[in-house]
Picture (cartoon, rainbow, N blue to C red):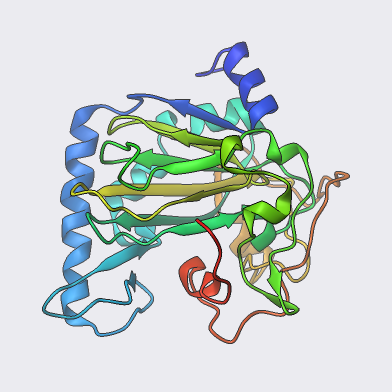
Length: 289
């Protein structure tokens, strides 16, 4: 154990999530806000989402509205360095082992008064793997409180089934919480000040409500997996070649031997015609947030 203690690891194993309040120093948060502002300038030059930015439905060039900055690690040397820092990888190694591979990164922009929700889902529904040592590290850049669209989870749901995320036979990227057997009383809301780190398991049910407050809630997600977790055919994980896949190693050594675990999976196929970001996919299903 490098960063976490035994109680924290046990809590993650039982509940499927962890919150590390104030994990990052204030100077990192200040620099992150500067980088977000720089990357956001692009929105004023486009009318529709592109490879760099995902836009809110109400966006215009004169009133730019961003709901996601795509792959911030490829657009910013600062975010790339943060991804590879010991402050991020240390806790991850404590949970899934020394050999860690990147899946993807995304910066969700829940801006004040209009930030879009993310409906209930499980990450492994999008990218089933041969085992479930798969997680997402969230970095909170603005205080995350009850009224500005905080991350919400169903504690312990990572130990249950992988629910059907399809509608009329087409992958829709979300579930109706009521049909899973869970209800509002089962929801745990993850709050914390800027600099807080959240970690959630790839099978845990989670989502977030819209931001109806007058405060932003911007949150960066680094999605990672153990190096011996390989995508199943039909997964939404891009896999161009083993060389490309191995370039995603963040620490430790790659392997050609997948570890097969007895876990529930579903294939996210067929994809909807409007497949893109999770926001676009989830438009194919209107669910209670």
